[in-house]
Image (cartoon, rainbow, N blue to C red):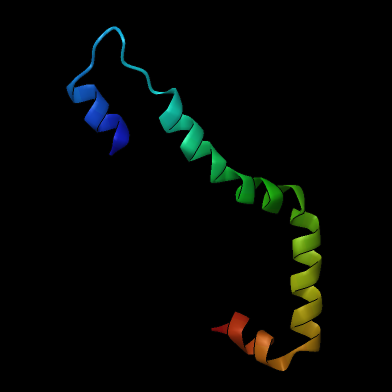
Amino acid sequence: ADVSARLVEWGPAQGLGDVFVRFCSGLKTYSNFFNNYSLVLKTVDKCRDVFPNFRAFLGR
């Protein structure tokens, strides 16, 4: 939505950097997940084996 609004009034002084900086700050969570993916899988496996309610949740 921010990019679309700027394109409507585009000019030589218009910029988009701040929009991308705001967007990319939200990717930190994904980066942490991706960097720890093998640990995430091991934890899910362990929880599935130890907690019957979690196993049922995964089955649904």
